[in-house]
Image (tube, rainbow, N blue to C red; front, side):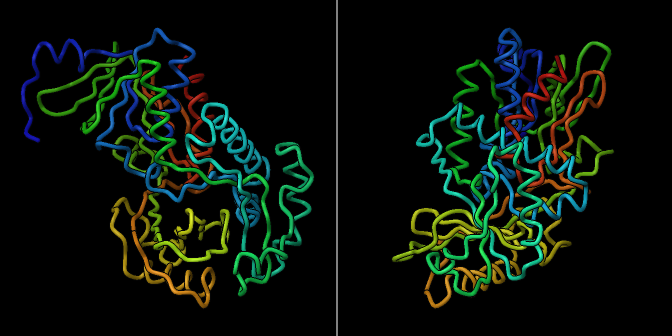
Length: 373
């Protein structure tokens, strides 16, 4: 859209100075706004979103509750130690509880249906008891993970050797959760500017200047970047690696056996039933370099790979048709710990949620609020 001069009416209202400006209206931005307004209702909070709806990971994921799988936790512990791994698990576990405190299951299609992981060797099973012991203080159960091989046939996963059940995983409707969060923000008088891209941010002694275009600059006392994989524009010194997650969704399948959420290969593959359809995503570890992008297009190679996985592992001996294909963009780093920090006197960030923003964002919103005030 061509840049035009704003009017006095616009400058006095939509574009007036705010106490807080949050850039990005995904899960992190919305939960941060809610946390600030609930503790400090007198503060004016504006969320700026460059698209008409949040477009990154929040509305383009697979609709998992994101507790995490057995092999994923083992892998995380080997990379960053058990202390950091358990801190993240606790944050996700508490985040899912907070979502359920705010919204009824029906409002967001939340279902604590249990999660499952397909394993084709026994290596991870040897650590199952150790992982359960580590998680017991968080989940308040002795067996967060258990072997559930008896369900392999029930789910039609005949080619899988082992199945591990996880009591804390679930599914939800990401779009409905986003809408309920937006509704909550409106209730709390959080304001929005959608379809508005931020060109640059400049901090002065008295405020932060947020440049929208050559004719328009907003001012704020503080700014929070919640732009996840799209943060390198603003946070040049942080290690933020974009990671595209491609997804396919089948047409309805007659007599579908599969029910629940499923992981495979350290969580790189994830699939679930959506009613009587199958939603399958991931496999970016088959093409890491190409998938390290903020481009939303899908690739023939990975789409074919996902279809083959669907054919061989999930729906052997069954016909299916693909109804939809899309992708979302996550943010990764050298480890899975999110970046939640103060960048300067008036600038803060909450980014790099490693594909688990659904569960992490409720608590991250509180962390950012505490950081600022």
